[in-house]
Length: 388
Ligand code: NZQ
Ligand code: ZN
Image (cartoon, rainbow, N blue to C red; front, side, top):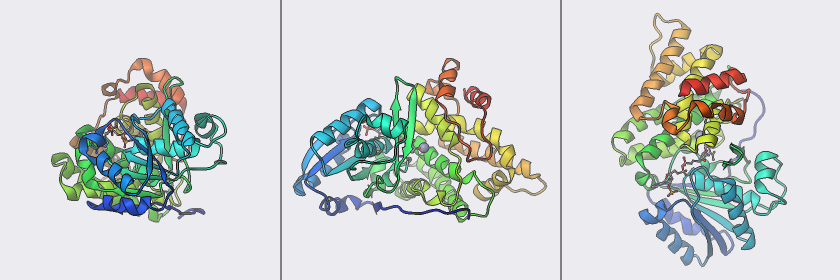
């Protein structure tokens, strides 16, 4: 293990088919005014909306709503949410949905009482939190981002061509998360696959850094093996509860700060994917799958030892008679075959990305240095080109 770290995640997770029964107990801990926020309407179609509204009514809450949180929530939506929360002085924000709705809720949590524009202050200037925050709780309907139990909040400014993720600390992490894997059964197939790849990549982003012997890596390998195993079942039978529940739990732990402990962490695939998302508005997990192989093939030579370990431990590659470099390459081939098996996008042109958009995407890409190789601008461009 390297360095000093603090692990603190205050989120209480209520997991399982009966998890929603715990919502009244959670609601009782907050004041009377609740901002209920959700996406484009899936929760109304599934009947979840009515159940949540009934629980809020039974708890005697006054409810204000911000519906219509889009995938990849925008600055305009963030500002609307902040205005509603502030005007009504709400005591709790209850987000019912996937990563977009929960990320949005966290943006409103910090932004509602901010002095000035929340996007400028907390996503562009990256100011430290210096104002009152509104507690957030969530009912998760789609697994992938880990937003249900972390401090991440990703907001998009289409006009500026920017998609920015801010990772807030424990003060902003949801206080509670209701995670019932059965609620994910209705997630469209494309989104389910995107969510699985998103979580897998969250683990990779933390794993592919450092050369020390680190407990976090062993946990990461277990999570990857579980996710790969369960995903193979879920793509064939999306209502297999065992597989979907393991996916949900693995997604939560993939990005709730645990496996980042003692790690430098990479996150460059996310920087590339977010830039692609900023210029296309494509589904997050699919932007990651589109840039992953060009990126990992490029950086693998700088971290051969770790990529060879990944091959052996996660993909059961038999290294007999092979050089470490060959083992590492076999691991990436195995990952690529699994990506085909679960059906994620490998060509960014399927996401509306094109040669013409490359300069804007390059401009929108933040280059980080926690992984095995810090990219040059030319390499960023090359990866985008290869992703087509
Ligand atoms: O909007 P509704 O109608 O609810 O439909 C959603 C949306 O169209 C639908 N859906 C969700 N649950 C459903 C369902 N449809 C039927 N039944 C259900 N049970 O699925 C679509 C996608 O939902 P969304 O919330 O956009 O997906 P996801 O959870 O992948 O979130 C994506 C956002 O999270 C950010 C991404 O950048 C993106 O903006 N991320 C957040 C992170 C974090 N907080 O740490 C980390 C990630 O790396 C990621 O960047
Ligand atoms: Zn992600």
